[in-house]
Structures are given as structure tokens and as C-alpha cells.
Image 1 (cartoon, rainbow, N blue to C red):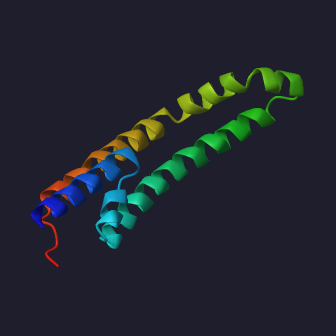
Image 2 (spheres, rainbow, N blue to C red):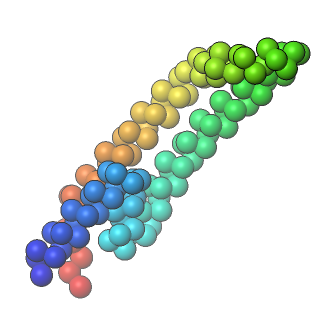
Length: 114
């Protein structure tokens, strides 16, 4: 029985590392923690994408010629990322912390004996 529990824990850690933080918790039926990790990562990504998108739209509206707009998409994206560099860095750092914290949480907790 102990071997099967160890195998489940290893699968859960791999899911949290390779799929998404919280996936391993869901695999072990710890839904509250699993959804908390997933929602936190999703919220951080949403905020970053939303802010960058708003900046891109703002910059694109300042260009009147559509041909210039098409040729300068990468330039606009770079400017948008630079304009919100701190937000992107903090968000990326937080996602990295969560990506490490989720599997560590799975490793530190004893398995449910049921």
C-alpha cells in the first residue's frame, strides 16, 4: 500500500511541475488547494495579459497608417512590455514561486490514510 501512495505522490508532483501548479493537488483530491494554486496563477497571467493588451491598443491607436501598423507590431509589443516591465517581472517571479511551492507542498504533507 505504501508503494502505491508513493507512486501517487510522484505523479502528483510531476503534474504540478509539468502541467500547472495545483494539478497534483487535484490528482490527490485536495481540491481547495489545487484550485487555489490554479486560480492564483491564472489571475496573475490575466492581469499581465490585460495590461499589455491595453497598452498595445493605446499605442496602435496612435498610428494612423494601417500599413505602418502591420509592419511595426513587434516594435509595439516590445514598447508595451517595456512600459510595464516591473509588472511583468513581478508577475513572472510570482508564477515561478507558485510553480515551485505547489510540488514542495505535495512533498511535505503526509498522504491521507484512507
